[in-house]
Image 1 (cartoon, helix red, strand yellow):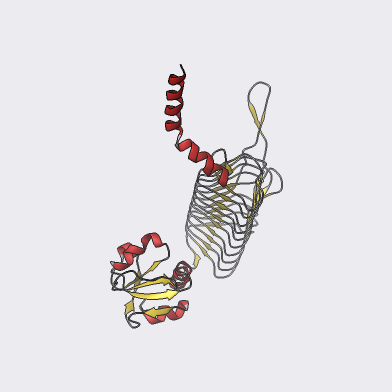
Image 2: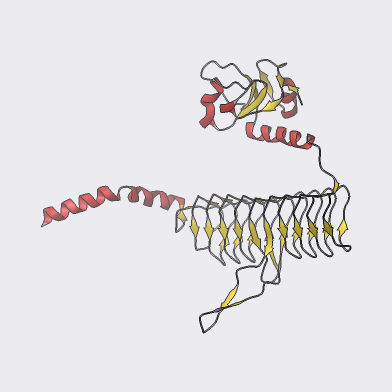
Length: 339
């Protein structure tokens, strides 16, 4: 598929600085730009590449001012990252969609299938499953009894949905994700062994949620583990039983949320965050990478470190920590002088 720079500017409401009629037939990273491709610059960390890139056109923010000569055509937009996202949406929508039911599959006679669906080979659809319209289920997906999948949701290869899981509209669940596995519940016995506490709840995932590859979300002991609308979970995340994740909260890879904790809306969790059980994380909370949380956090806070602490306190403490070798030497010197 080929467009002119002017076509692309029209799609995203941009302004051309350079040649409007040059042809664009692909995309590339700015540091690996090739002729005939479109790139973008949103992070100024990569600004130097714009002066040497071979990409024919580059999306930049309106406020970008070149410091030296460049040879590419600029397409100025309010937000370059949002603009490239919009263009990639158009590209993905142009890719032909798979339809129909491949063979072999197992689909229970009691399952209800919507219109315009795709079910890939070697998939399993259990009893009393409801699948909405335009749902895409790629090969080797396992869907347990009583599962509900609403319209326009995508399940990639190897996804496992335990019985009674509910998935909303426009969700994406990536390969290998396991939704509804048992929560980690065991009662200690006097002899030192553990008795399994059966988990009889389910998982509910609301609309417009994306779940990364090999992420696991445990069912609740009773009631529902809940991932609210708009939440985005990266790969290799563990969400424990009875957890609630709020609207539009995002979590990076290797985050772990222990059972019965509640996470508010619009939170940002960086990679490898750990949250202990039975806690409440407020709305608009940001947790830096590898932060460990063992206490409730009020709305709007930023925490860093392990154990986690308010970012302003952590920065002051870290400034001291970095100077510990010098402080130790000074104390040792003073100790010797005192003797």
